[in-house]
Amino acid sequence: MARSRRKPERIRWALLAAPLIALVAAFATLVLDRENGLVSLIVLQERVRTTDERVFELKTERVKLAEQARRLRFDPLEIETVARGVLGMVRPDEVVVQLNEDVAAAP
Image 1: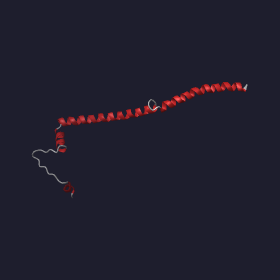
Image 2: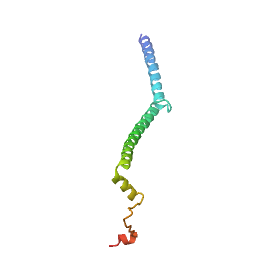
Image 3: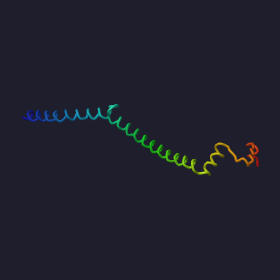
Image 4: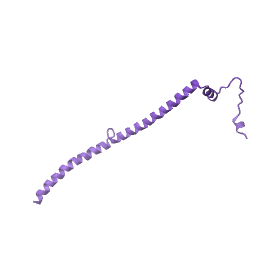
């Protein structure tokens, strides 16, 4: 009679083990599949995060550039600052004195 009890017990374990093995295999496939698995999902999420950060940086830079462009159109002091600093322009009545770096650095 002990044998008859063991056989249904083995069948029960086999019936439980088969779906468990299938579930583990499906989970392993889901995790390890490079194209459609969790790894690719994590990589894509990281790309989205870095892309969102870059978009934010570019929007911030765009706002700064728009403000700079507005100042260059309408602010005479900004126009003069750029003309002198970037373009090296001077007013007609000013005298330009250029010093060598050696002379400027001497005490």
